[in-house]
Length: 478
Length: 95
Image (cartoon, rainbow over all chains, first blue to last red; front, side, top):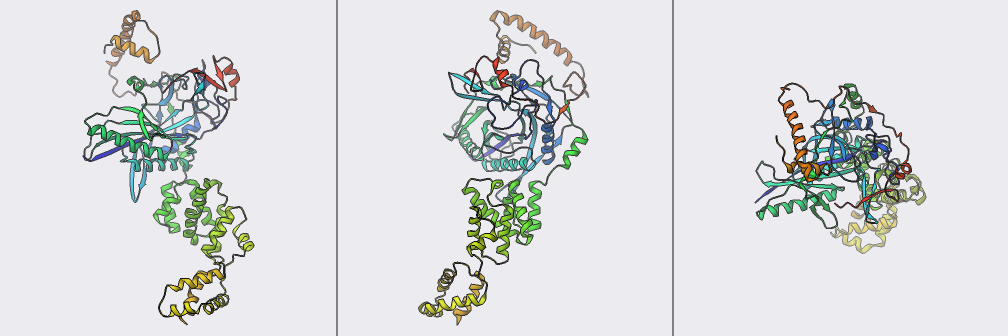
């Protein structure tokens, strides 16, 4: 039987506020344990939550960016369960009336564009962290993360397979960073996914029983976990079994998913409106203000790059995949001129991206600044150096040897464009290789590259390739 | 809607409230009375009335996003039963 994979994703994006969602404690990552957990986060008796405006604004910004409905009234609810890293015995979340409802984002898988509907996005607080290392048989609790603001973004089950799930997660990851509402740092847990996965016979409409895979904190784990889970479910059904609706955990070491909670009642969260928090009303003025702060979104930027700089859809896609990369590229083009946009794109996507990957660096920390890369692009465009020599200059810039002009000067890399000088070199080579010349003239065209090689060797690669080519052809023809 | 003794035990467990077997029957009676009251309210026609999320008809005040709390973990941990390496220690929990 042919199976169709159906996936919906729940993404938890940590909102980039200074303080927590319901308290004035700091949210900075990496602080010593419990130094950023105040009385409210600890749920000491008598404390009350006070909502952070910054978190509300970021949620609205997201809603506007995906064309969703911003609920003018939304309600906070208590999600009740017992766990030591949840001091109140409930998590404050939103249930019946979330702040954001509906909307969609467009993803690209290969050459195909697809619209993925968003069900809702709601505000909630994060829990603390349990450390299960041995503390004399006890568990250590760090509540620094407790009450950190999260936006949980829930998609409709519109994704058909791991490739689409990853494309959706990546698009969302890029979007929240463009919007500057989440730092997107997956190692630090600022962006995590849960995947609801089910399968059904191809061509049928009824959804199969789903399993939820929790805490996927990398795109690779998301891909692997979904692929494993799909095979597991199909095997069970084909063997005549039934899928049990449950929460599963992906174990990256074993590359498998396994059941997390067996007790059915663990899912009974008994939501009810939190009496400590009044309904949250959003004014039209607030929405208008936030609308004004919306930046150019990735899709619009992609279109503009194609239009203004004549880039291909592929190039524009790669260059707008992250806000930092798009900004870097635009800065290079601003300095080097729009006429050199294609060259700039090749450098950013090629040598620069390669060097960043090699040295495991983010573009924001590139040793070669956008201005310096633009300086290099300009020297290629005005024929001061060939693109081959430019690679050497780039590497020298990467090693911190100065800007392109200084390196070209110091290393004597300036291209030889003087026709007379090139002719002189060619004459010398022809004279020194009479046999090859005779063979070439008798029809062995392949020897042309031999002469090019000799000339490049003689000039240490500095002869202008086009000029050399033309002049050599003339001379060899006799 | 009527509750069973099994429901009472399950609800008690979810709320981590310990009730002895002899208490189950009286608690069942009390809870059923409350549900009876709810049923009475549900019989009222509420067409066109928005559900109420809070008893007071005011809306949430939003606070500016500023860090206003300082580190007081020493004071908080002084009253905690067990602490080590800055962590609150609790009986072992396993996932």
